[in-house]
Structures are given as C-alpha cells and as structure tokens.
Amino acid sequence: MVNVYVRKGDEWIHALAIPLEDVRRLSLRPLKWLRFVTFTALGAKGHLSDTPGGNIVDYENVSLADLAEDGNYYFTPEGKLPPAPPTIL
Image (tube, rainbow, N blue to C red):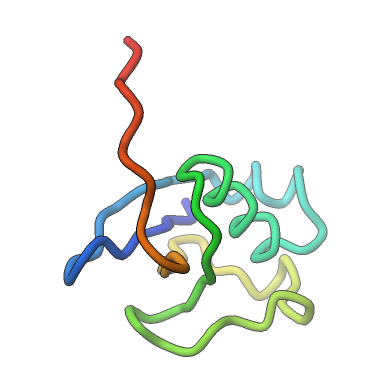
C-alpha cells in the first residue's frame, strides 16, 4: 500500500491509501501520478516529499521499482486547502 499524507496546519493527515499493484498498473511515473491523484482528490496543487516537510521528490527519475510496498509520501499544498466538500455516503 502506498500512503499519502496531507499537511493541514501543523499536522499530517492520512489522505490516501492506494495498493501498489494499482500504482504499477496505472502509471509509468508513479510519483507524478500520485501527485496528480492527490491534486484531483483535494483540489489543491502541491508537492510530494518522502519525509514530513522534506525535500521535493524527483518526479521524473523515480521508477516503479523504487517504490516500497509500504511507502509513505507527504503532500504539502501550495497555499491553503479548499474547504472540504460534503461527504456523500
């Protein structure tokens, strides 16, 4: 499972969990795809890092083989996150 955490204020919130098999099946550039999926889900542009508050990952040069089974990535939005939409059950 690949996990994406989102920075909201001073804390990191678990936002997405995507099976590694799906990432491999849907993308040739996995981190670029994860950034896109996170942008689509949250409605905010931003960047991924592999540690909380760390350096931006190299979107172009990380291959599928480089992803760990239980990889964690941290999404720092540019500016503020938009308000959360209502939950549909």
